[in-house]
Length: 313
Image 1: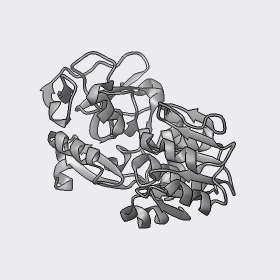
Image 2: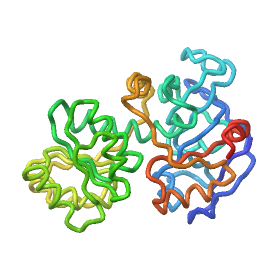
Image 3: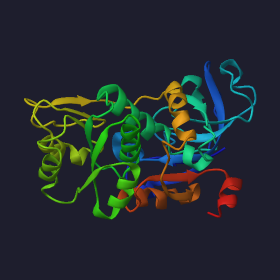
C-alpha cells in the first residue's frame, strides 16, 4: 500500500511517500481502507519530535473509510461499511489502517466522508472536556479559547447543545463564524487585554473554562474568577494554581463516544467546518496551511484517488 512516512523530525518537508505492506489486524482490530484522514496540531507536534515510537512512522491519528472483508465481523462491522475512528497516535495517512473495534464507529448519516475524517480527535477531546471534566449544563457560563480552531468549534457547539452560555475568544476575522456557532460574546484573542475583556463580559470572570490552545493558558487564568475550573488538553506550567482548579487531560479514543455524538450530527446540532482539503500527495502543503493558521476549522487529506477525483482536488 501507499503511505506517508516520516523518517526524521523536522518541518513539513520531511513527509514523504512510500510503500508498505498492508497491516494485518490483530485480535479485536478491524482493517479499514482509508478514504480520508484529518490532520491536526497533534500531528505537527509529533513530526517535530514528539513521536515516541520508532522511525520511520506513518502519521495521522484519525480516519474515515470502509471496513475490509470480514475483519469487522466480531464487532458487527460489515464489509464495506463506512466507519471513522481514532486508532492511536499514528497510522492513518495510508491507504489502509488497523483500528481496535472499540475505537471506531459507523459514520452518522449527517456526515460526509471528508467531514467525518476530521471529527474523532477534536470532537471527542471537546466532549470529554466540556461534558466530563467541566460538567457543563443548562445556564452555566463557560469560556472557550481559540474557538475558531477545530477543537474550539466542537467545544462551542457542544456547550450550546448542553444549554450553556458561551463566551469565546477568536481572531477578529473569525468572530462572525464563532457567533454563528452559538457564542454569545466573542473577544479578540489578539488583543493584549482580552482576559480583562472576558472578565468584564462575565461580571468578574467565568467559573468554567476550556483552554483549547497552549498559548491561551496564561490568558485563561487571568480571565477566570477565583475558584474557577480550567480544563485543557495541554501540559505545561499552570499559573495561579492557588486560586484556579487546573484540570489537564488527554483526549481518549472512544467508539462509544462517537456513537453518543451521532444524533447531534444527524440533526445538525453538531457540524464540521472543513476549511481545506488536499490530495494526500500534497501533504506538505496541507501541513503548512495548518501550521500557518490560515484556515479556521479542520484540514483534511483525501487518500482515495476516486474520492479526490469526485471532489476535483
